[in-house]
Amino acid sequence: MQAPKRDSDDMQSPMTFEEIYQEYGGKILNLAYRMTGREDIARDLTQDVFMKVFEKRQDFRGDSQIYTWIYRVATNHILNHLKKENRRKWFSLLDKSIEDVLTEKQVDAAYWSNARPATPDRKMEKKEQERIVRQQIEQLPVKYRVPFLLHRYEGISYQEIATILDLSLSAVEARIHRAKKMLVEKLTPLAESL
Image 1 (tube, helix red, strand yellow):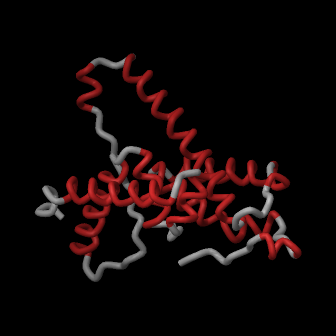
Image 2: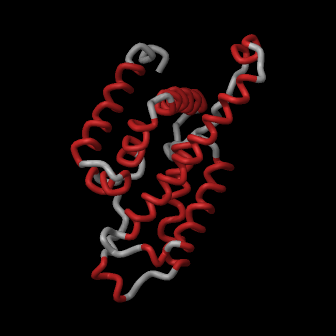
């Protein structure tokens, strides 16, 4: 599934901001949710991203497709948020005792599949599988997680990811390959519980 191409030749009839939001808002929301795991934060980040897109719309030169540019803005904004969030977590850990840190539980209620299981048992099993996979994806280092998510869940080509992340094509290929390899290594021991 790939977004419609609107390259510089298409700029003779440019999309309005409303059309851009209608076309890409849901995709950016999905990206933000997959990268953060929290719907409320994903919605805030999506709003921030489109504010930036609106404010910087004159910066779009047409060197790439408009959605590639938007994904780049979104990815950078979300990564900056994740970096700030990680710093906050570390500082908040300094205020807690080791016992408190070790006994804290974070509930991941993300059920992000559109599949409808036939039975309640199958539904619970599928939900648990997805929770485990999502948890393992979230544990990947950001430099591997982001290209993997963009390709696997957003359907973006390696070349477009290279443009979005300002990497070489071979670096993107290597990072996605490494992410898959890391996930296989992490999930293989858990296969019996899946």
